[in-house]
Image (cartoon, rainbow, N blue to C red; front, side):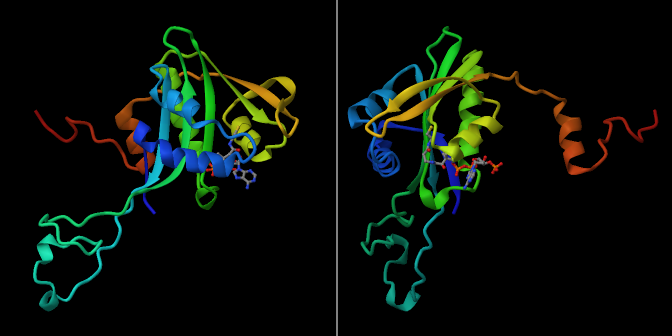
Length: 213
Ligand SMILES: CC(C)(COP(=O)(O)OP(=O)(O)OC[C@H]1O[C@@H](n2cnc3c(N)ncnc32)[C@H](O)[C@@H]1OP(=O)(O)O)[C@@H](O)C(=O)NCCC(=O)NCCS
């Protein structure tokens, strides 16, 4: 599996809605609402997709008269490149952060069951927080079901803190919503060269080192 994280497009709507409905069984967003989210200039949605190239079936050259034009779906297309099957959606997440407001909301996040526990949720959240910082967001908010221990652990670990409870917010289940807030941390900057060298455990080499003049 090779995971690619990229900005969501309206063309991703069908796949997002399939995962949305499978994940939030009793309270999935309607498709129209999700479409508006993807199209909003104030929004920032990401998808994580599995873009591992499908293996091209090995063919015996003797019975492949036009190997250069073969596609893996068996048709002969005249193109030199094999056709890949559609990539699979592994997750999505969205931020709403109107320009100039200084505030933003994590609107949603979902990772496909088969891809959970591998750091994808954390990666998506980090990317949204980074985007919020770029939009000069000082405070980020979100709501999470009180009974969603996994999501709450993720948000806690990212620095979100509980600021309120909305009783019976999630219907039809009647589950409370926990409202959480994050003071968006400033970007950590350090000299790129020394940081990179330190991480690799090697000594930085001065440009003039060893040069006698
Ligand atoms: C919440 C969700 C997005 C996390 O995605 P994920 O890719 O599995 O998460 P990660 O692998 O990045 O793990 C991030 C953190 O989540 C928590 N977590 C993940 N799996 C966990 C588990 N099985 N048990 C307890 N905590 C868990 C941990 O705090 C973990 O951090 P750690 O690995 O440093 O311990 C995913 O479980 C999901 O899609 N759930 C259904 C939808 C949902 O609840 N969305 C949130 C709505 S508010």
